[in-house]
Image 1 (tube, rainbow, N blue to C red):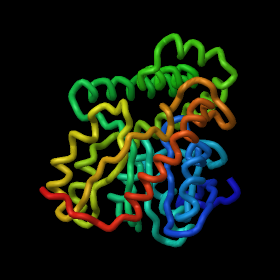
Image 2 (image 1 turned 90 degrees about the vertical axis):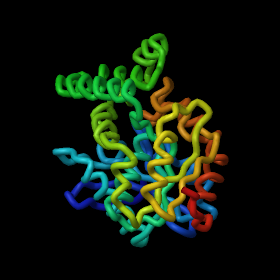
Image 3 (image 1 turned 90 degrees about the horizontal axis):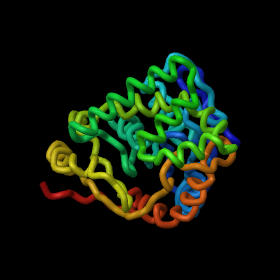
Image 4 (image 1 turned 60 degrees about the vertical axis):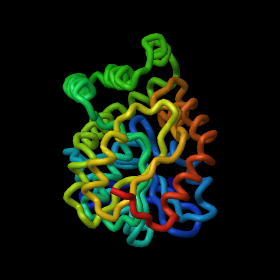
Length: 288
């Protein structure tokens, strides 16, 4: 990352900027850094001013205690100010949840696109999420960073054999370096899309692609969100997978899995077309 900005609490946030056009900030998900979104940035930079960044506690960015979701929103506010005072946001996975929170907070956000935000939209998923939060808090509190990564991988559905292989691979140290940020992702996800956007009558609901293996999470919220957002629009586009599944074995620099990086590069052209369509297209009303 060749640039830095300073968030409201003094935390240094590292970012990279490329291209010319309307400003777009790409927000990565769990176990990821700004490098994860670099292939997508490259695809978009011929028509957008694209910013990728390391969220706090990751890569080259700082991390000031105590953590709060509001601090990450302030990080985005600092980035938006650094790139001209207004931007569209694209977030994937938990990064999508952060994008929704940032837009709902009133930041100068032009358009929002999100990819597979893993909200718990039914009772079983909510129970699993609560158990994960409790266990993650316990292992991180005991300094068991490796166990925290393993817990996350299992929570996302990675098989036991792959988890054992990952623990024995050279990439494990890089993943452990990002372990504390798993609590940040979990905190960002501690809300529902209707609650976040429902009382913001001036904000449009999110639009985004869906992957081939998406669980029906955010999609279930569509009728409720549409009803609360008169004149808003919600579009699902895809399929495409910009991450290839965060946390898969085979990590490269900064703890970003090599398989993830390869899949991100392969998917980048398709995802770029989706983001381009969402950010650049005229606003269209969704019938209620």
